[in-house]
Figure 1 (cartoon, rainbow, N blue to C red):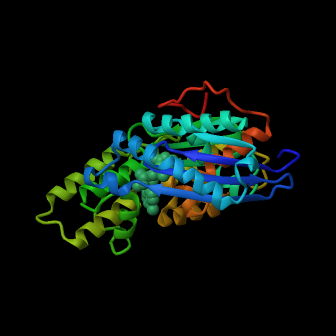
Figure 2 (tube, protein in one colour):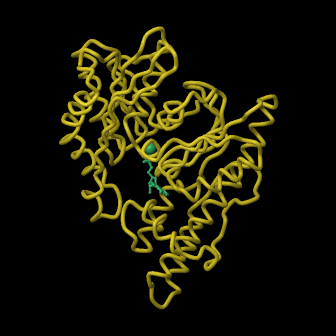
Figure 3 (cartoon, rainbow, N blue to C red):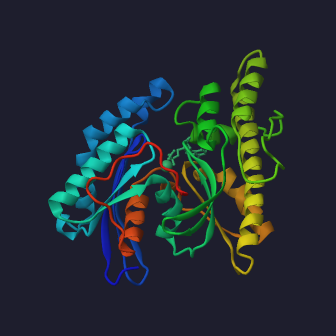
Length: 349
Ligand code: KG4
Ligand code: ZN
């Protein structure tokens, strides 16, 4: 951490959440979220059953200015209290990313403060360090709507990918399953809620990649199996929905746990002497309580500590972007005002 407190405005617009936050990092390690505002566009996208990029970009334009003003107001630091501005520069829906990044550039230019163009995935990857000072290196399961990866986090900007999804991301599978079952949008929370009253043993769904060597995932076969089983039912009743949601969620958890077990073995091989290895789970799907429980059991069995941010830091937010900005700025890292927005931007090189 730097020798003085750093106060950063974070801006997040890479998908369907318009978010602005002010976070502060102190030299003694204390972290503060001074404001953390998220405006979800669920209602705008709900009729389409998924995120429509053009609608998302327009919605960010409509509300971002007001969100930023409110975040600064709530933080009580004033514009003059900002040491920098961190905006998501990718990966994501390019129209939305551009809205947030251009706004960040304008603020940096007007206030003469550094701009940090943050990789959205790095925001998720470091989100746990906003809560507590988890030491590098740690193992990371990053599970969101667009990404499903196992990474070794060695430091800020230093990631090694152990595995990833060969097709759909885990969150995408939740969203598609919810759509198939008529559970609504966004899918993850809807499937989790429906699954609470369901029997996870009723439908024998496949566990793609389970037991295979390595740390890769695959979810498209699972989604197809849900579709076939749903089509085979004479009529979809609420109990069928609940049972299918529970069976699907259990299959996803089994696969994620199995892949994490492999990643833990690989991580241990690389860092045998680490006394207390940590598994961090981040991204929107990490909000799932059943998955958290399954990962906690795996960690207990494998001698790892599970670290998971609170729910609102799992799904997209600007506090994690601001925090990644603090981590970078503390290392003397910032970006020129001509950096480009990127639709694709892998974390590892
Ligand atoms: O990290 P995030 O907010 O956005 C991306 O960067 O993609 O993740 C959103 C994804 C969506 O697919 C959503 O359905 C899923 O996270 N999600 C969940 C839960 N809450 C959100 N999946 C399972 N259980 C949940 N409780
Ligand atoms: Zn995300």
